[in-house]
Image 1 (cartoon, one colour):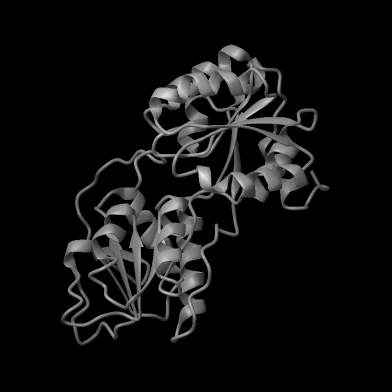
Image 2: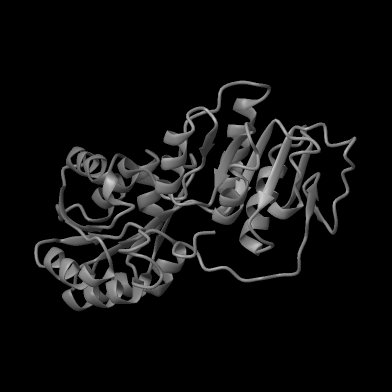
Length: 309
C-alpha cells in the first residue's frame, strides 16, 4: 500500500482465500480456476489480506484466486478480471497482465486516475480517498461557523484544485490554496495558509502531505489553534481533529460490487470511492480546541438520518 496513507504490520504469508476463509497455500488447481477473478496482493501484510477477505466474502458464487503478485502467470492462463491490492501489485502487473481488465485497490487516487486516462476501459478501481463533495459536507457539518479552508497541494494532488474548490463553494466554503513542488517549500506554504484560514484540510501527496511530513502539519496547525481535518484513522490518532474514512472491509466490499458490475464481459465502471464511510474524531483534540465534535451525530447528518449538514 502507498506508505503515506496507512502504516502496515507484517504477518506470516497466506496465499489463498476461498469461501470466506484464509487457507495456507493455493488450493485451486489450474483446471478449477475458471479464469474469473484473480486478486494479486502487493505483499502478505494484514491490511491487504483484510481487504481481499472482504472482497472474497462478497463474491461467494465466483471462482477467486488470491495470492501475492509473483504467484500469477498470465502466459499459462488469465482471469476475466484482475484485482490488484496495493501499489506494488499494480505496478508489477499492469503490463504483464496484457489486456486483462484491472480493478485497483489501495493506491493513490492520482495514480489510479492517471492509469485510467492512459488505458481507457481497462483500468478502474476503488479510491482510498473520500470524494471531495463528501469531504466538503463533512467540513460543513463539523465546522458550521467556519468558512475558509486551508489546503496545501503538491505535484500529484494539484490536479484536483478546481474540483476541490468547486466542492467547497457548493458547501458555502472557500479554499485557501498553496501549491508546492517539493518538501523544501512546504513550511512556508503551510504557514501562509494557516494565517488566512479557519481550518486546514490535509490531502495526501507524495511530496506535500504524507507520513514523513504529517508531524510537522500536526504541530503547525495545533500551535495556531487551527483544526486539522485528516484523511486516515492513523492521522486522527496522531492528532487530527476529525477525518472521514472508509474501512478496508468497506473498500473490499465496493471492489466486489465493481467486479459484479463488470462480469461477464461488461464495461468496467468508472473509479469511485466506497459507498460507505465512517467519521472519526480525536476527542482530546476536540476538547482542547473547544470544537464539540460528535462523530455519531455527524455521520447521521451526512447520511441524511438526522437532518442535512
